[in-house]
Amino acid sequence: MIVLGIETSCDECSAAVVKDGREILSNVIATQIELHKPYQGVVPELASRLHTEWISQVVKAAIMQAGLTNKDLDAVAVTNRPGLLGSLLVGVNFAKGFAASLNIPILGVDHIRAHLYASQIENPLEYPYLGVLVSGGHTVICKVNGYDDVDVLGTTIDDAIGEAFDKVAKFYDLGYPGGVVIDRLSKSGDPMAFLFPGPTLDRGEHPYDMSYSGLKTGVINQLDKFRNNNAPATKENIAASFQRAAVGILMKRVKAALKDTGLKRVSAGGGVAANSLLRSELKELEKGGYTVTFPSLKLCTDNGAMIAGLGYRYLKDGWKDDDKLTAYSRVAAFKKSYP
Ligand code: ATP
Ligand code: MG
Ligand code: FE
Image 1 (cartoon, rainbow, N blue to C red):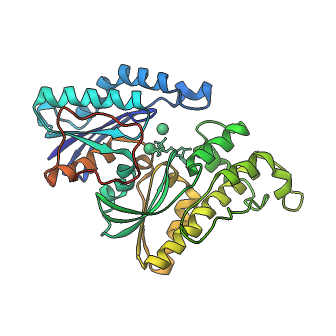
Image 2: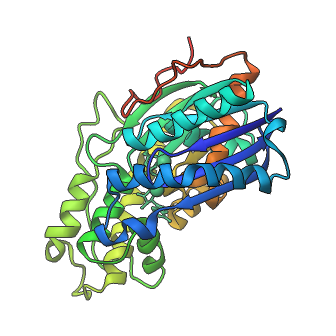
Image 3: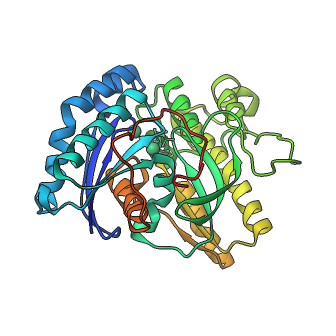
């Protein structure tokens, strides 16, 4: 079964063709990064306008690169939530027209669920497992019981981890997008140059919750307070120290959740799952007998393949949407997709 996946929730205009949910025949990602760079962040109006200009070419390229024609497609899966409303609407409406013209089913897919599912395309992991969803807008530790069955164990109570990377990079003018630059600069910095503390959260009711706004404020406004042994405030040292602290906050809760739930498998997803320190710290867990997976770098950030992959699962279980499918900018994280 061949599924076309379309993703336009933010600043990536992407389309992919995936066979039987596993075989990625193409995964075209047209990123708008360069066009938003002057503003150091995604400008919603610009994003949706560029999607309208690019979408048909991107879809055409994905089908061509897969070596197929429109007639070979069995279904269209499209991100319909959450994200920038204008951007989502471009993808959803294009997908609706495209599916209708070919008389094939359409499926709306939750972007966050798809990030978490991405690793399953390349390295299927037996359910249940501990899910670590770390992206530009989300930070969630959860128990994943199935592709559409997720229990949230903890979330950030303020900023998302990716947002913290982006804001620190923006403040220190490190480059755009922030996560990638901080990851790179950290390699030549001292992670102990600044000793930023973790958040002091009430461990009672929500023991796996996280906070990133305190760390962000510390890095931006209180460098001197956390300076270790007169370490110089170079970009590299700031980046490495921030990255160590950001990953540390997450890993502390991941380890506690693994211990408490008794889960033996872990999988991460989302843009921050591309972070080299997080990947190596998660991999370290294998020494303790855990099985750890994450998506390849291209499947961490926004892409159509994860949408097609998850769409295939719904389709196989008999779910689909109709022409009433629409876009939602916000949804409760991991509300069940189909009844
Ligand atoms: P969401 O998925 O929550 O709607 P989004 O789609 O904007 O948000 P993603 O595409 O999953 O987010 O990821 C983008 C985020 O990942 C950005 O915050 C970016 O800085 C971060 N990121 C990308 N690569 C890395 C990296 N190597 N290290 C740390 N962060 C990274
Ligand atoms: Mg993006
Ligand atoms: Fe995303």
